[in-house]
Image (cartoon, rainbow, N blue to C red; front, top):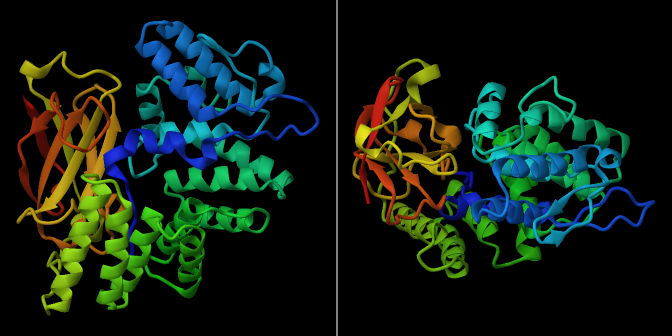
Length: 407
């Protein structure tokens, strides 16, 4: 049982503060001041939200950020956030910004959906067109960085940026290889090691091997209280039947996670499942014999009730979840989208699992529901728009889930 880990409770901001989005400069021959791309992007969004800049200025500044990380020589003048002057980053950081946009994309990683989602979060048109000079869609941008890394294989930070972005695109094999390249030239922290282990396990059809175990041990050595690492270590132990060890890891995970966070709740659910296994209870097993293409998935559209029209903004976040019929434990699958262009198509399969050892394909029927969050958090909050749960058999590709109530 591996654990493809999604920190749903803080999904919107978590990628913006990843270590890979920190200060970075590939231009060692100049005195160019480094900037924190995550802070720059957050400040830009805040300036727009507070009305200090309009949409046109927002798009111009964001385009400059993208141009800076792709072609530093062309953008060495002009980028200035309202009230703050920031130096420019030279080369190679495009994936830092790309990762923030990729996060709101469909789990399938298909290029057309990627482009549509990037447009919904206000990315400049230059990044939505494959013919544009700034690099085309995000897959094209990723290729540009990959090409740069092929010419500069000793750049460990570049490999790490590339690895993380491959992971967000669900290109796990390439992420695994990029993390290995990075590890050969820089010291990886616990977060990078945990993400590497996650990607490596995914390349093995969610099965743990000695290499993945070694990576997790390195992550634990780097930070014994790292939440994702403890989650992965527990999942590895659970998968080989060492439920006592799994419980120990997950108790440590719970202690390290913020109270009332999704991490904390996931730890509780995992511990309960491991205790059940110790007590001799069997986990739920799928009984579906439908074709493989649809047997382990449900799909459909989320619609918006007419009475709620006007209450969804482009920056709001839609969560679609599938849970077991009894409603116990964490969701079996979570799909996220940012935008307001209803109806919105969705698909829930094992790639959207929180715990791949407890996946949607294991349950012949599930409850599918949806909500829109203003804050981007999966935690319940006043103002959320809600849909009533819809019971669905696996393989149903024509579900209609309507948002019809406000919390």
